[in-house]
Image (cartoon, rainbow, N blue to C red; front, side, top):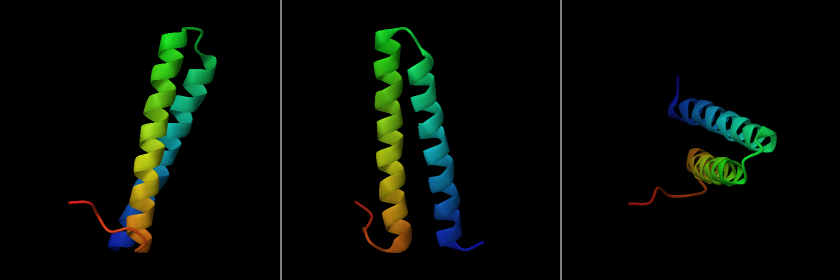
Length: 63
């Protein structure tokens, strides 16, 4: 498996996790828990976007 395939697989996993968290946030009735889940989903989505960019060569890894 090539490095870019590994990145794509990881990106898919991260985006699926972010979607699961968003769905859980929509189902919960506790406002604090909803906010926590949404923030976690946003962080994971941002990380997956960065990883996706690195895999395509658009973004250089931050040191």
